[in-house]
Image (cartoon, rainbow over all chains, first blue to last red; front, side, top):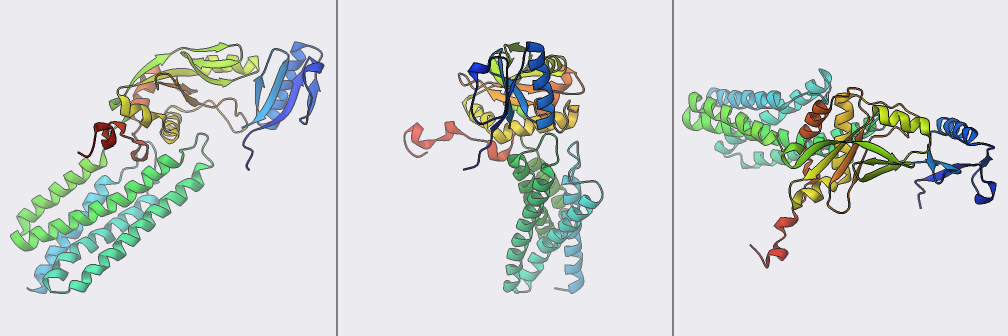
Length: 61
Length: 298
């Protein structure tokens, strides 16, 4: 099976909502969340998707 | 008959065939075949095709029936042309910012093969006319076959099958929409602003039921994106996958939502470009031609 998409990182301000295999970044504020997501998007060549206002994921397409 | 007479007949055929290839060989906005070297390859192949076509009639007249088997060699040869084009284009496609997609590539490759057969046919008919009626009718036949080759060349374009309208792009939360068609999820606000600034949206409404299936083809959609980006430029670089032009479909009525990021932000021009995208042969489906739906064979 070829996995076409993968979650490379999870960025959140709500620690209790996330868990699992991908690296998790816990941020203190919404600004930090945006900053982390922008940087990770650029570094990983993935797309930052917003699941909710508190949880972002970086997905490789 | 005299050998000189044959030589002239063959010459006429070869010239008509090579001319036909020269005229049907166009490096337009796609810049393929590449200027000069790519063209030389295809002109030479056209010359070979024309020679093969022109030789067939004299060979038959001299009762050399086995000579016709070399036409099968020609068929193999031109299938190789198609393979060659397919392989080259597929290799190059990896390095395009917006790829052509294999349906488009197959469409290009198939027309290279097809045009060589047209060339052979043009040479064949011209030689035939020369031997039967002389040089003047032969010239007329030559011109006619070239005109026929040109008419075979032009397939239909998107503007024949869909209505194209500009549409607003908007965000609902993280979801990017063109009209009411969901395109993708963009999380970062900065990126959203960029997309609202540089993005443009278009809605393609199919004109009939056959078109719905044709434009839903992923290859056809990729062809639209490639042609638009090749002509109008693209606001994207490697490593910015979020800035990706995309086309999604409205499942209710088969309309397409086209989201593009052109450098030239001219809606009328973009409509023209989308309208001129060729309808790919391999994407065309004709549900209305299904005989079992019409109640038996035609």
